[in-house]
Image 1 (cartoon, one colour):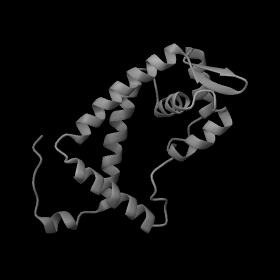
Image 2 (cartoon, rainbow, N blue to C red):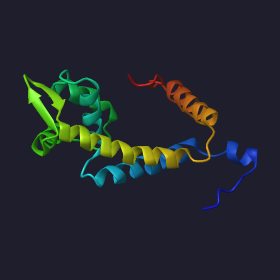
Image 3 (cartoon, rainbow, N blue to C red):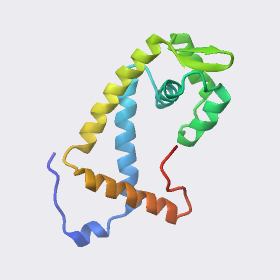
Length: 152
């Protein structure tokens, strides 16, 4: 697809909501499609990464509370946790979760798919422009009363 150039004035008048919404749909849609190859959803991915990042520290309740801020689909996190347990990707011991070898292998496969989406998304974009874009979006969020800080 040819990336058409436009005059500055025309670009400056574009509706940010429409473009940020379309960017969201394309990015998240691509990530979700790649995760689906492994039979995963984004909440599976979030769970695997959080558990891998802090093994033996995440209870179901704490992880659900942490992941709710990312949820835009009304996810049943208990179902996600149960699915990962049934797959043998996560174990629970004393109320906390850890990844199994199979879970870590699956997480790494999914990570590789996501890396390819990120590489495709960043194609032709100068890293400084990307940082500027993130900062502009953060400022817009903060200006409208949201949290413009990076997630913990």
